Amino acid sequence: MEPYVLTVALNASVDVAYTVPGFAAGKINRAREVRRVAGGKTNNVARVLRRLGARVVATGFAGGSAGQFIVRDLERWGVVPDYVQVEGESRSCFTITDPETGAVTELREPGPEVTAEDVARFREHYARLLDGAALVVISGSVPPGVEPGIYRDLIARARPRGVRVLLDSSGAPLRLALEARPFLVKPNQAELAEWAGEALRSEAEVLVAARRMREAGAEWVLVSRGADGALLVGPDEGGRAGAAWRAVPPAIRPVNPVGSGDSAVAGLAYGLLQGLGPEELVRLAVACGTANALTRGVAEVDPADVERLKKEIRVERI
Image (cartoon, rainbow, N blue to C red; front, top):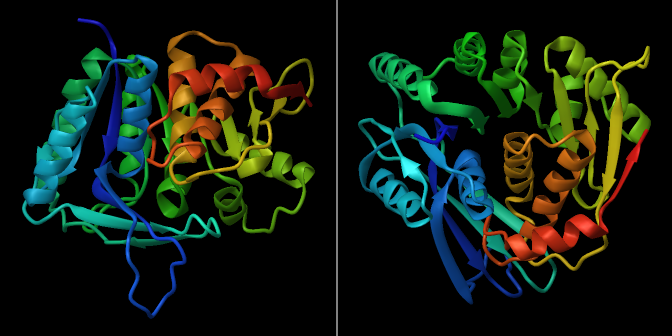
């Protein structure tokens, strides 16, 4: 069987995206368009990976009718869902985009309560799925009832098997996960600032914080910076403290930027599967993130956009 990317969504959701021209809080608003997809950050990654051509197995917790929708929708995208079922209802998350202003409003439910027995079943299930995994992607929040150190434990379980883990999280789960030395961590600039405990106002300050995150346990760190692109920091080279690359995308008129960070993670994962070096890896990540912003949907990138954007992205060693 062909190795797959294993995506882990402990707090998967049904993502409902409304397009509402002239959205006004406190008033009756009429949606021009409504889209529903299996969501949570990791399921966004899974969809983009499938668009790029990777084989993907998605796992995590799912419950109730929302959980059933998540499974069916992933199958629709060609992802293989292999979830642990729990009592209660998987969460729904709502996004309202005003195309006139570009403003995005989000409402996120906390997710179902997960028991210690559920977690134990998941750990066993995850260990079995690692047998066929070429790479693991862990993203997003931890559901109620689950200890924040679970990402650390999942990374530690993968390391002895030689399976690299990409992590996109924040807060306590991120801080604890660094103890297990993930292969790559992808914070955005705000998440990196939160972890560092200080405002990051310049590229130089972002680089310093990213190198500190490497010292804390990550082998590679990619910091997504929205329209400014991304910075990739890797292992020390030739006496330099953390080799670094800057990728700057072309100017675009974004349609919907929601999911661009997740799309960048998918680009990283796919690039690692292809054995890309750092320069082409960050180029692909930024191309995927930028391509996502050109679509109305979330994590529904067009591979043709990715290929075109790769040629327009400027990558520099810094």
